[in-house]
Every structure is written in C-alpha cells, then in structure tokens.
Image (cartoon, rainbow, N blue to C red; front, side, top):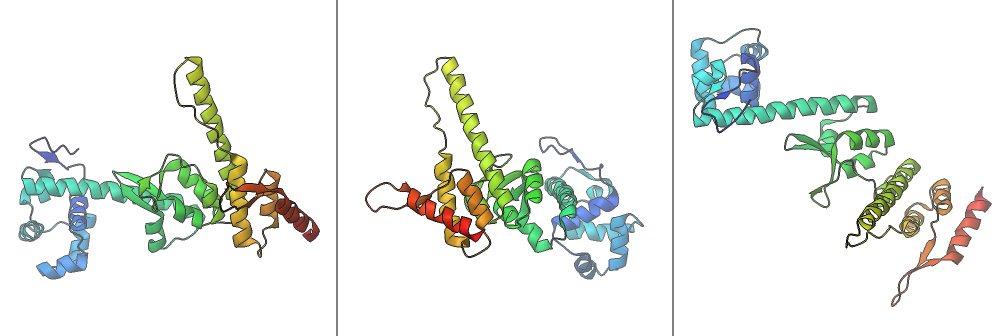
Length: 281
C-alpha cells in the first residue's frame, strides 16, 4: 500500500521483475531504448522484467542511476527518499491503469476487434476508474455494447467536458446519431423512468408537507417530436419508415416553426407523413 504520510512506502507486493517493468513504464521508455542507453542487451532486460533472470550488481547500479532511484528501492521495493516515494506513487498508478486497461479489453472481446486508436477513443482512466465516452460508444451502433459499458462504467460526454451520471441515461439526440431503432427505444425508456423518478420525488416532498420546487415532468411528446423532425431531415431518403412509424406511434408530431411565436405541433404535416408511410408499405 502507498501512504505518502508514512516515512517508508512498501511496494514489495510486486516482484522484482514487475517493479522493473513498472519503473520503465513510469519513465515512458521502451526496452530497446533503455538497453541502448545503458549498453545492455535488450534480451537480458526483457528476462529481468519477466523474472527469468536477475541482473548483476553492476547492472543494478546502472539501472538505479538511470532511473534516479535508490539501489535499495530497485532491489527491495521499499522507498524512503523523496525520489523513491514519487516513483512508487507513479508505479502504483500505472499498475492500476494497466489492470483497468486489461479489464476493459476483456469486456470488449465479445464485440469484435478494436484497434488501439478505437479503444483510446472509447475510454479513459481518471482517479483509478474507467470512464467511457458515451458519444463514441453510441457511434459504434452496437446496442449490446452500449448496455454493457453503461452498466459497468461511468460515462462522460466529451463535448460538455463533464463526467456523466452512472449509469448514463441515453438521450434521443444520441440515438439520432445511430439511426438504430433499439437506441431510440432505450432512450424513450430512460425518459419514462426519469418522469417516474420526478413524480416519486414530488410525492415524497408533498407527503412531508415540505416547501419545495416541484420537478416538472418531461414533455415526452415534444421530445419525440423534435427527434422526428431531425430524423426526417437527416434520414428521410434512407430506409427509415419503421423508425418514423415508431416515433409517430409513440406520439411524435411534426413541428411548425414561427418567427415571433412559440413553435407548435403541426398535425397537417404529421398526417401527410403518416399517409406517405402507409402508401409505401
């Protein structure tokens, strides 16, 4: 465990080879680079890090000087100097990040192959936790992947630069990006759950006669109508009849925009779209 308030930091939980690999990782060095800098064999360095063999005292001193840590720390994993403590702290962070990365890779396995670049877009590690990029996850178009990641990890929206709620509540705007009906269904379910939660909150507050600001219900028809408008604008020429029909079945209408007055639901345009879909079937 690491406690910077203690005089000594103990990293003996790691083997010698693990410590050596973590130290190199903290310094962002490749094996070939370290070997070249110290005139060592990269093959031997690899064996030291895997525990197949151990370096001589002379090579240990080279490594300690190279990494600016004490010989005692590199051999025993016990840090007492400020340099050793700083290294130990960074090693622990790197070890945790490596474990989380391995865990995330295992979660992704059933969903196909992801390149290193694709993975880096999907998640990041903050405060020893995995945070998943909700927009990149939705962009995969895989509803099962979204459900797994949103149930296991905290989600964040990079466009807002804030950490999202856990689990993340899918929005209709995010669903529009996929044009996948399953995402729309999930988003509608989340909206309905949000309304139920608001009403339950209001009831609890009323029950105790508490003076509170009542949480107004979400106008789900209006949210669906805004979504319908976006779908018609972006996907009308594609195979979107089933999606548009689903939105209409759940109360969506077209919106008539006014310059000086609030927008209103346009039942005439809505009826026209319904007839167009009916005639196409």
